[in-house]
Image (cartoon, one colour):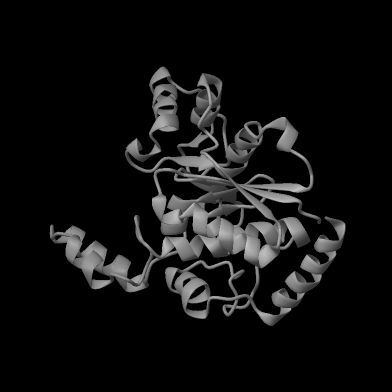
Length: 263
């Protein structure tokens, strides 16, 4: 699939994304025009707020059911458009419903097949898995536009098993959980984590490879396209290893050569 331009939509509540550096990285890697945009919700209206509130997930054990939002829920969504950092607690949104809403906000003149849109949000997207019949948080919803959830990056890949065991022990004993977080500090990605700047590069690459080939992920841990289910694997693939595998390097090399000819 040919790409003329990539549009990156900012999440102002998460400055660690560092969109300016991300633009430079993607231009260098894919040799296409990359355009920085403000938040996709910058000019959203009450109808968009209603749609988002209706896409909330309340029962993670059942497939998506459209929710009839209250005025208060719509008001909260409206407030998040101008101040997304004000979100209290974690709200789950059905990822496919969320993506459809986002698609409706992309300017029509830029919504062409050769333009790829990647939207950052701190809202938590999730999808229903019929294998275990429950919703799971997702860092990435692949489509056009693609959605990268910074909350999903933090919450979806699991932390070390012992972390959860120690947290449960402290809860049951009435102890402060901060000591557990300190014990495992650095072993998982946290909010406002400076490593997020590097991590989002990999998720952008996955979104772009999906657009190019239809396959966003790699089975190899030694590849930035690896679909990490554990924080340790995420940090290894994206930071410690920090590159794509030889197979995907070859795919990228051949694609950039063809894309250059078509541009």
